[in-house]
Amino acid sequence: MTPDVILWDWNGTLLDDVDLCLDALNRLLARFGYAQRYDMPAYREIFGFPVEEYYQRAGMDFEKDPFPVLAESYMQDYIPNSAACPLAGDAVDTLERFRTAGRRQVILSASPIGTLENQVHERDIRPYFDRLLGLGDIYAKSKVDLGLNYLQESGLDPARAVMIGDTVHDFEVARAMGVRCVLYSGGHQSARVLGGTGAPVFDTLSEAARCVLDGQSG
Image (cartoon, rainbow, N blue to C red; front, side, top):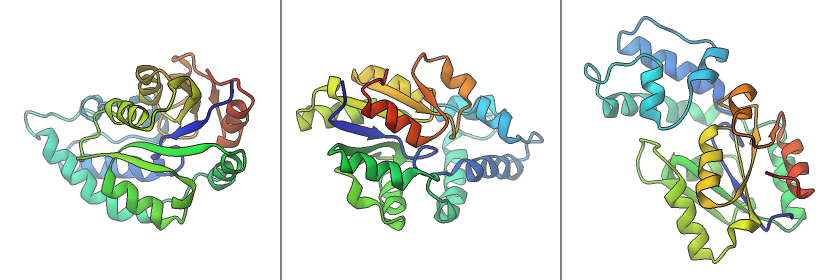
């Protein structure tokens, strides 16, 4: 069954900010006096949600450095530098493909809503989306309630929606919402990690779109 609505993750899926996030993590570790640094394969193995647990996996000590202090410092680095992040290579073509197919598109992000709105507008892709849904703070806990509220308010059948994202959390969000999920392995988590969900995993957004429009999404 092909969906009526596509629920897009933003960071690491449509927005290619993975290199920046790795660099920002290593700069955060340096600012707070931690010795460890991560390369991309290691980063993609430890990244995840909730962010508190990801920071702990990275070796941060909340007794010494409270999570809100770390999160604020990270965002002060990330937000201005994110202006240089490109979209995923086939993001615009994929958005256009769904629009041509008559599908409603929504971004469901753990980003603060103001940051999300600015990043989308800066890249001139706002017209593709029916709604932008982001969180009310910088702590990036979960998108589940946000997505459930949207489906309820819009009167959308969860069975007619598909989530496209790049993390296990996106799969968990989709499952909690009762919607299908397709995962993209070019973002913040490796294909190995994503494969553990049992959801279809693709190397490109265009391949993910083909799966969705063919009615094969999990």
